[in-house]
Length: 371
Image: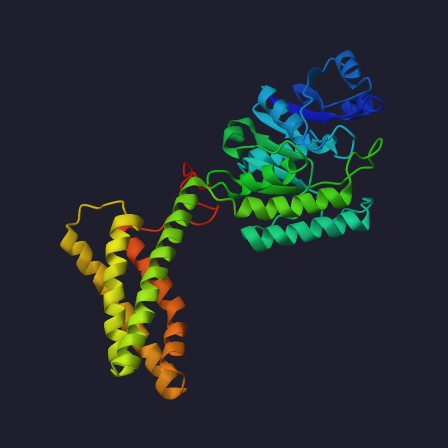
């Protein structure tokens, strides 16, 4: 197996030779991607016999992610190693990490600095930030990742297209791990390493970068994909139809009960039935326009079956709040709206379009645009 090491660098010329000397002999190629360097990084890398690429794209002055994506695209190895060019990560531990990759048939290994080994010194504010982001990932994604911000990873080149990398700034670090960890056809693992003392000065503003990571992790979790956008529009349309039907329902309920002096349950049932008919006609015309092979009378029968179940829920809840708790019948009616709305939308969408789209990023179908 050929091994490629990708080093994103910005002004690392003074210590690049020391970093490269730590790289073990099993590595077949080292790719240095210089991003907006103003020193001699590229010249030093060429003298060391390394592959040198310049990629000066940035987002708000940061091109870390662009450099990594460029290096991955250029790599020819069966295994790709990503790490920083500042000597922070222990590249000399690669033999053990690659053994882990091969022996356990893993596709992607994120190198994990926590819990810290003896001799590792990481500032408390950084440890606290990583712990907070790890907790966010655990809460939003259900993933136990011990070091979401590690800058060292090892993976099989063949999975690179599945990672769908897009972030050109620091957020590539959480993106590459989350993409690997949630993908159903990628086997993800972590491997414990020791962080070393960095050469040179950091290019990060820790607080700014930390908050950027926090917002990106949340936004990525709830990004609206095309199928979800379609569902959202459909849900919005159904809400407008339901609101129109609700106005009719309340108006007729008041008319029948207060003006015509019907019993409140009879009035509620009659008003609900009329509004349900209006709802049905508008849904067919504007909301659930994707048709099945069922005949219209069957669709109508199922639609109204769902509606009459909703009617039963409405009458029971109204009766309970009005007769048992003494609420006014209009207030009791208002309390039923939310329950019946979600019941009606979910059931009717299932009937007319077979099933709901998957709502979360961990889709079972690898080819789904929700993954």
